[in-house]
Every structure is written in structure tokens, then in C-alpha cells.
Image (cartoon, rainbow, N blue to C red; front, side, top):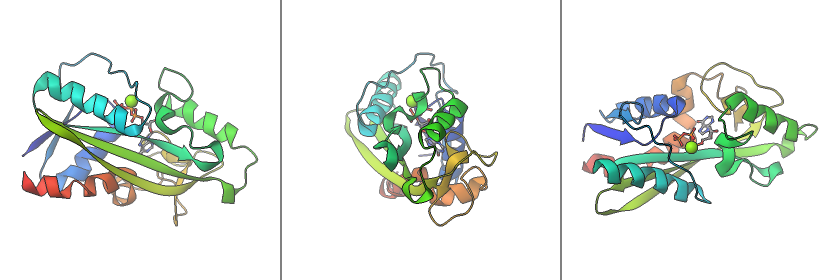
Length: 196
Ligand SMILES: O=c1nc[nH]c2c1ncn2[C@H]1C[C@H](O)[C@@H](COP(=O)(O)OP(=O)(O)OP(=O)(O)O)O1
Ligand SMILES: [Mg+2]
């Protein structure tokens, strides 16, 4: 296998996947490379369900193996929110800045020790006529008091991975990809990747 289609339009994810799969010699294509203008509605109630919806919709349409990523931020003090609603936390129009500021507002006054959180990434690999498989990766951390750093995307500027004094948005792309939820999920696909 030399090319893999990822069922996403999120440029931040695409950039992560390009780097993470380059060591396997796999070229990444995304929905941005295809003539696919539909919006896939994420109607599931779990990361797994939403990842399956995205991967299976595209695999069925194009009759090729497709990987999808459903991911988000779980904050303990917010009972796991924003969770599966991370992309649309501040409204249907996806807005990374509005989303992270909503989180910061909700955590106002909460001390560091109670600002624990994790990024979660569930990958679904859908193939024509084969049951979809799932892999999950997480990355534990602490939510900061204000956004710091220019790299990455989404909630990266407010997320300090455990044991680090830099946010994910202050890290280089390579540093983020060594510890991220996405890389931890991909590592579990190793078996499948070396079989292809
Ligand atoms: O490494 C990450 N660094 C920072 N933030 C992140 C990361 N990974 C996921 N996130 C956040 C972004 C978005 O608010 C949500 C994913 O939502 P999610 O529905 O999976 O993706 P999406 O709608 O942006 O693109 P798509 O569904 O087309 O793949 O979690
Ligand atoms: Mg989405």
C-alpha cells in the first residue's frame, strides 16, 4: 500500500497524518484532494460511532480502504466535555478560537491540579466487505489559563501534555507527533500497516 485516503477535511489533522505516515512510506490523500463536497453528519454518540460514519461513508462511495479520525478533548472538571462535541463546542460553525475560549471561560478560577484533561483520537479503518476496525490513542495533560503558541490547531494552544512546560502549540510538529493521541492511535495500526 502506498496511498491511504483519510476521510477528513481538517487541515491540521491532514498535516499530522502526512508526517506520521511518511515513515511507513505511505502517501496521504484526504477529502480535500477528491471531488467530495457533501458534509458527513456526525450523528453518533461516541468517537467510535462518528469515526465509523466518516470512514464507511467514504469507503462505500469510493470502494477503497479509508481511515477516519474522530477526536476531541475530554476535561475532567467539565465531566468530559467538550468530548465528541469538541469541533462544534461554541457553535455549529467550527471555530477553534471560539471553542478554546469557551473552555477557558468555563474553567475560570479552577486551580491547576483540577485542570486535568486528555486528547482522545479514535481511528476507524473501513474496507469494502470487511468489518471496520477501531484503534484509540490518548494523550494526558493539563489545560492552561490562556492560549500560548502558534503551531498546531484546535485546542493545542491551551493543552500542556503531562510532564511538559510547553503547550502543544509551542512544540515543533515532530515533538507533538511523538506524544500525541493521534500518533498513539496510529502505533496500534502497526500490524495492519506492515501486512499491506
Ligand atoms: O491534535 C489536536 N490538537 C488540537 N485539537 C485537536 C486535536 N485533535 C483533535 N482536536 C480537536 C479539534 C476539533 O475541535 C476536534 C476534532 O473534531 P472532529 O470531528 O474529529 O474533526 P473535524 O470536524 O475538525 O474534522 P473531520 O471530522 O472532517 O475529520 O478535536
Ligand atoms: Mg468532525
